[in-house]
Image (cartoon, rainbow, N blue to C red; front, side, top):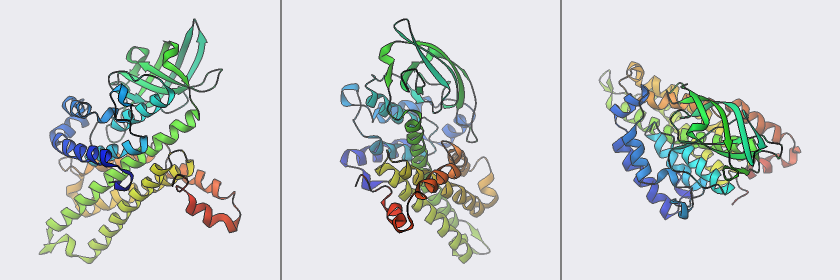
Length: 355
């Protein structure tokens, strides 16, 4: 996936991740994680390969990939329904590197929102607030967030003892915990952050778009294979024209989702490019998941069949970091500012600024 964005190093990492995750994301691992168990061996394989540190500079044990170069790894993880916060770790590394904050050892996640307040005092900072929907917040060793301060929005790095967690899960049974923060931070863990919460929310939305695009490729492949193998009325389901047409819609949505995600990855600093990515992948996720279950029939709704590990993630990620309505509204309001004769140029220029 996303071959046009990858250099030789990126392609090697994506191919390696695909092999490792295919072996690690077994039915037993997915089932246990769905019940609340942390997939220790899976995360160890991810960290040993260095995927979680891909956005960190080489002097910190990373690869030095940009966020756009690294997020295809999150797409591969999503394709395998890997129940680990790889996307969040990549985003955290990108943020810390950009702010000049040294990345700590351990699992680092990201909190998106405006629930934290930073106040100066005693040669450092006091951080307080309640954060909701923090991915793997109860399990994480470190946390990156943006907080409001008298000097403007600041990027902050917290360690495990800085918060108390209440376990919460989304539809896919992924941790989306509530954290109550009350911490003293030294100056080395705080840095000014251009763009603040808006930038963090945009990059998190892009990560979810890339994940949905990755999961959709697997949903497409599973549905095509099932239609070829499942025999009904004496012939495979895929031989029926109505089924072929339905699967064609699913395949088109999967292709459109990847193309839209590429638009966002090419211009991650452009809110309109990210709006295209998140809104289109979200639209595709809703329709494609429904089609996949329709083709699979009753079998696809059983807990034993792996389809639900993907579709429940698609439904969850679709609503996280802004749903289609939110991003389409942002996109529409921006386009309404253009005169009619400039509208087509404005539309076709989205995502091309970095080209």
